[in-house]
Amino acid sequence: MLVQVTQHHIQIGERGHSERCPVARALWEMGYSRVSAGDKIYLTKGDQTFQYRTPQIVREWMDRFDQDVLVQPFAFILDTPLKDRRRPCSSK
Image (cartoon, rainbow, N blue to C red):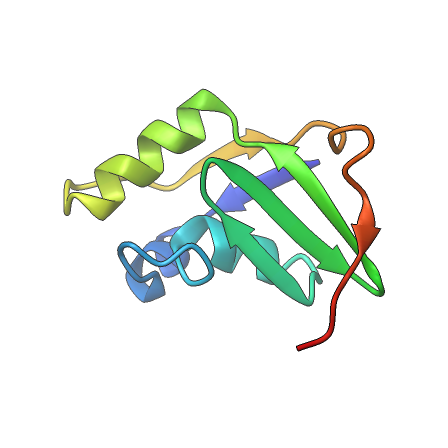
């Protein structure tokens, strides 16, 4: 799936917060009910949570954002979920 991180996501994103960073904000807008973006990306839709490998370019971009380095909007492809990692979402 194509994920587009816009200037708006960058402006409202929070440094050092995996659920409120610009990448997570972009994924929220794609209709996921829970999102966490870090070394792995976790996305919840309905009662299923899917785990993805975070592409290297995204990890590097997030590191620069967290270090308060000027970043630009960008887009990336999130491949298929990791096998055997789908699990029911726990309610908290």
